[in-house]
Amino acid sequence: MSFLRRVIIGDRPERGLARALRAERPELEVRDLPRDDVGASDLRWAEAYIGFRPPRGIDLRAFPLRWIHSTGAGVDGFLEHGGIPAEAKLTRTEGAFGPRIAEYCVARVLAELQDLARCARAQRAKRWELFTPRELQSCKIGLIGTGRIGSEIARRFRSFGCSLVGVSRSGAATPPFELVMPFSRASTALRGADFVIAALPLTPETRGRIDGPLLRELTGAYFLNVGRGATCDEAALAEVLREGVLRGAALDVFGVEPLPASSPLWELPNVSITPHLSARTADHEIVASFLAALAEMERGARSPLEVDPQRGY
Ligand code: GLV
Image (cartoon, rainbow, N blue to C red):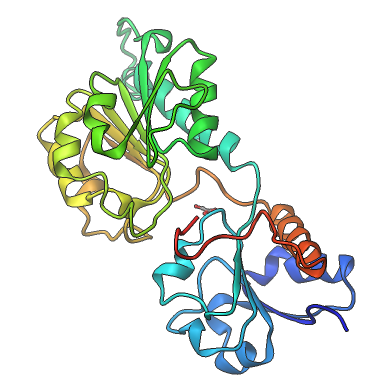
C-alpha cells in the first residue's frame, strides 16, 4: 500500500508538472488544473494538493488532504488564506532562490549607485552628462532577515567589499554579517546603512514589522523588499519615500499582488517596481522538492522541506 496515490495540482498546467511527476512516479494519479478551476470534488478526491495558494475562495481546512506542497519557497499563501487541515503536512519548494534574489538585489543596488536611469535619460537626449557614480565597495548594507536568502544576499555583497549588518528574530551572530541584532534593536543595527534589504517570510510575527517608526530611522537609505510585501507598512513606506526620508526603493513584493493601480507607490519617481519576479521557481525545482519530500514521508521521516505552520517558515 503506497503512502500516497492521488495528487491535485492547482497551478498552470502548461508548466507540465503533472507530466514530470508521472514520469518519475507512474503510480501516482495526478489531476492538473489551473488554480481557480480546482473544485471541492477534486479536493475531496485528492490526498495531496500542490500549488502556491489554495484555489480562490476555498478553505482547504474543509478537506481531508494529508499534504499541501507549496510551489514556492514561502507558504504564507496557505497560512494567510485560512490555513491547512489540522492533520496535513505542509512542505515548500527548495531551489536557487537565494542566488536569484541576490542577483536581483545586486542589479538594483548597482543601478542606483551608477544612476542607470540618469544615463538612459541623458543618452536619449544626446547629452554628454558627466557625473561620478558611487562605489558599492564602500557601502554599508543592512539585511532585515538573515535566513538562507538573507545570508545569500549578504555573501554576494560581501564579495564586493561592502560591510554587512543584519537584523533577525534571534539576533544571533552569523557569517557573513559583521553584526546581527534582534528586531528590537533594528534601528541601531541599520543606522547609517546605504541600502536596507528586507528578506523576511510573512508570519504573524513579521507582519507589518517594518513599520513607520523604523522606516523613519533609515534616513538616506535606499530600501529593497524581496521578501513579502506585508512585512512592511506600505502606507508609511510611501510617505517616507515622498518626504525623501528614504532615498528611494526597489520593490518586488507587495501586500496585495498584483499591486493595485490605486497604490501611490506606482507614481513615486524614486521607486522602482517589479512584479514579484526576483525568484521565480523553476518547474524542475517544484518536482524535485515534491518527490524528495514524498520519499522522506514514505520512509516515515520528517522532510527538511516540512514547515512548521505555527512558525510559518
Ligand atoms: C516566491 O516568492 C516564493 O515564495 O517562492
